[in-house]
Image: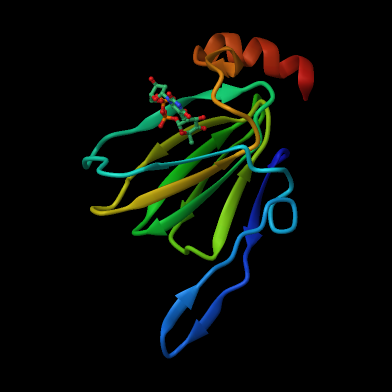
Length: 135
Ligand code: T46
């Protein structure tokens, strides 16, 4: 889908375990200004239901599994994240919903900007109206 994509990170795997390095700009397509993570999501809960106007993000499921529903005005797809060496890039004007968090799952998010509530579009009708002008 436009403005989305899967990134594969280096995986250093030896008898001592796994190590995945992620370098700002080298491994992801922007400079990281903010990091947050989502944990302890109970079964049946869906988060998200919004789009961003400027923000670029990469989502990495460090433990367990989580599904991400991505939408633009013309398309919809569901991506399952279950590998800590892969990241889902989500750019501007993509609607996202995160659901089916497995017990103990950890969703890490790398973001291109500091938190700004004005960058969110949380109403789906307003999202469609703005996004249709962009795509
Ligand atoms: C996104 C998906 C993947 C902050 O104060 N600072 C922050 O950096 C963030 C991300 C959130 N918040 C506050 C805003 C809300 O009062 O934390 C509360 C929960 O945020 P929200 O309902 O937006 O959480 P999600 O899980 O629906 O969405 C989050 C990100 O907000 C969003 O950018 O793309 O994860």
